[in-house]
Length: 374
Image (tube, rainbow, N blue to C red):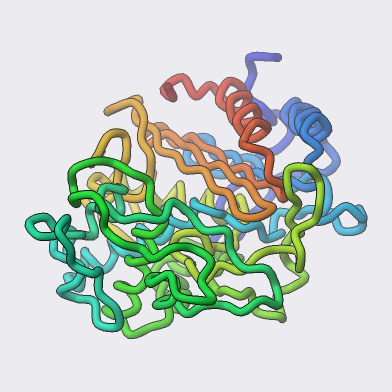
């Protein structure tokens, strides 16, 4: 591979309002990264892929590869929707931290103090230590339920309270505390589902509406939504999901009432805007959602290598943040430097155990000289 950054000679792309302005057509000019992506898609049987690369604090490449499904009729575009899986947690975390900034939530208060519709059941583990927002965001609240499989189209959907209590038709166990809060790190999508109910109770708004107004629109994430199920009027926008062995997800995708944990529909470029919002904020520049000081808290390790909604590696000038995601038929990976304005987002419409995504991300890091990323 050449040591020159991918695509520098073929295209310049700049953030322009809520969209992208292309200085030269990308479709007509394949570069080295395009060849790498094509090889990974062939080797891993990936139907469609979307990526966005950030360099120098701006999106320098945004492109779709392949097709929305195996018929090969509709190409993936920069506006094709993918399910973000657990990257939803990172975006939802910013919404919660916005409420902390305006004084409606506290990072270290017992969440039950503000919850109205449902409360975390007390037990011997919560006698002295409580479930707090900080602990939820850093996966150290002692809450159960790792992740969620979603619900196939046409099957009964549980309410959020039914998910929290593991009551039918929920397909996951009750979300409960079974470790003393704060004692240890354990990944919990269940915790973010508690946070979803907390935000609903505090704001009095449906979760997708709150996130749209407070995070997605301010950051220019114009294609993104937490709406579950996706409105019928938008059914033509997403790619169809495929499992590891190539079978299509029934109904094209699953529905996730657990929106904060797994329910974001988005694009690679929209997630790149989220990344740039964090980078700009950390640099003391514009972020319409959270302040530089809150961004620093978000990117400060709380338990192990977990910040507030993001995983961390390195420190100070080498600090980077990342999150991966998986829903039925969709995988995604987001990784960026905190201080040097570099990063990338890759989304695919097949479950691939992250092998292809990690390979492509490593090659982007080398090609764009992410020397500060561990």
